[in-house]
Length: 446
Image 1 (cartoon, helix red, strand yellow):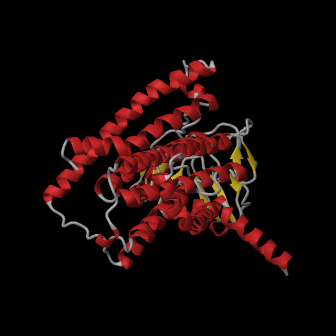
Image 2 (image 1 turned 180 degrees about the vertical axis):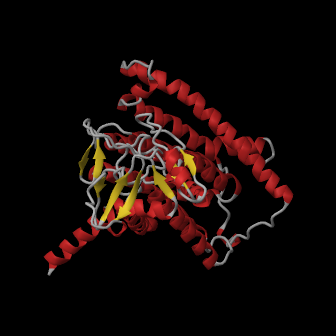
Image 3 (image 1 turned 60 degrees about the horizontal axis):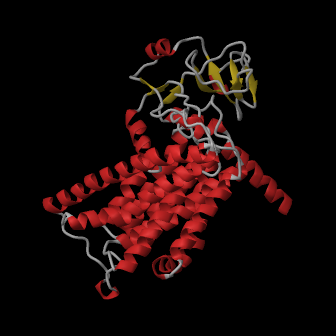
């Protein structure tokens, strides 16, 4: 009985990990690829592979996902790589421009927004039929990228509630750290292309299982709901609906982008919920420790740095190593700023008898001040990040004896990447919760 259950679970996981389902979803959403086929390429595990072992994905002949019902008695293996469950990838000799003119309805040829962060590969062109879904899911995937984090967390700190923000960041650090580390333990590859269209290339060199975008897209909105409901006055269903929409948008966007299988996204969602269940009861203890314990700064720095060193030993260098150090650095900087604020009596939490807090009435003046804080604060953070980057990379290269002429290659060494990311983003996190609020106080923008 138990053996049968395990077998069925394994079969279900294999089914959900099949890239054909990702390709079908992309096709339903109006995304089609422009994959190449040539005699030198061979089939391997349902993917088109070059003799060098790299998945083909450059501009050339067109491929589309096809079903066996599309054909009569002709051999399904002609001119295409076979798929699963009666599906295959059909390749034609038509160029993208020829297929664009043959197909009814408007289409737009697009390239991935950002090149691969490790290899510099710009990716293949693809065709978009539904621009609304393209922009919607691009927004969804950006909710898990650095630009979002460097604007969202400061917005909460400077304009909403520093108490909520520092606890939210603590949850985010643990969720992302465990997610990135688990990726390097499981080492599951990204969905094969073809049949999947790589709408995004930036993270394509990282491992796939679990989806850390799905993890952050689950942890952030639901943690916000847990931390703010009862502390702020608003209807629970409003907060829950907003959290669900946020989570679903991020999760589905990763399938649309061709970055994750259905299994990766489900695993990320469930893993994040598990971490929240375990971590939430300890949140008060951790926050109070960061604020009040005498030796908290030393322990915070040592713990986060040790976690970073451990993560760098899990696998060879990839962009996820730097992302992990960046997340840990941000968490350390925010925790240090929290301790200093408490020690100096700055940014005190409102007393319990003032809870629940009422959202202020929206006005032009309130929005103008909030926007001014955001613009000024983010500019300061970007300036600090640029300055610290200009200092730490050459310094780390000089100390470790690594040539600094090619920054991309230099950063593939742990001796450079770990201190660079950790120091730079520790300073960014510290500035977000301490330096920038003091600047606002000086300018009377608090």
